[in-house]
Length: 64
Image (cartoon, helix red, strand yellow):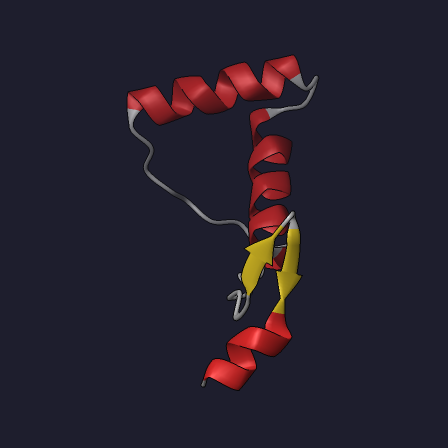
């Protein structure tokens, strides 16, 4: 396991501490979980338009 050292603002540290306490975790474990979730997040662009809550791609592709 590797160790890293990071500098946090007092505000960010307090936020992490509050979040960790709320979730019954250590600050270290909270940071690791947040990093893991952030690394898994993928942004996917929408190439269609939304009609009645449904994305329709056919019209958008035909328009191009």
